[in-house]
Image (cartoon, rainbow, N blue to C red):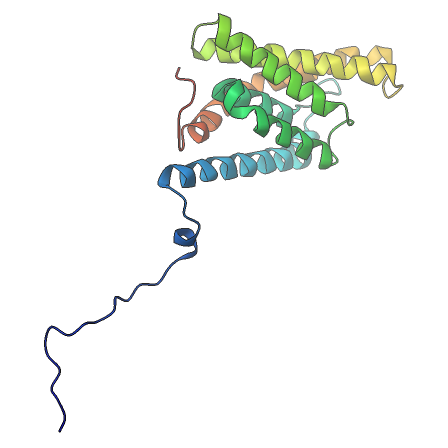
Amino acid sequence: MVMARRKYDFKPDNFRATLASKLYLTPKQRLTILRWFLFVVLLVVTSVLQDVILCRFQLFGATTDLVPSVIILSCMIMGANTSAIFVLLAALGYQASGTAPGYYVVPLIVFLSLLLSLFRESFLRKSFSSVMLSAGVAVLVYEMLLFVIGFAFGDTRLDRWMVFLITGGLSVITLPIMYPIVKTIAKIGGEIWKE
């Protein structure tokens, strides 16, 4: 005799775990991972943009230095505490990409970014102009220190100091263009230093 199935018999749930649910990440952690992933994508895109397209446009022999500018700008927007590890890893990635002038760019970018970001957080008002001032000074000092170190190691000549200064100026001009992109990415998944 076959028994008819009752309406209230136990039925197991059809639960299929996704990869994201197996990682046990909170929504805030997922957004933070998305933010850092988008910063990596931004650095790759700016590196390709700088090395493929912008290198063809020269002004008195100088072109922009876009990747260090984006790294420094992201540090200024997010603050030194949040972006310290990112700046170190991004500077290492920039140096490892082969487009950096030498191994000395890593300590230069990290030191200047964090120092001027701490200065900005401690002494300046929270505004767009303080971000541009701090990032602009950091980019110009970075370019001039590149010239000094390159001259000390014999990589450049003394008469090329103006080219480094123009490169710094062109890179400072790109900062307001990159600001909305970097700030939008920095808002994803958590607190940034509010403007």
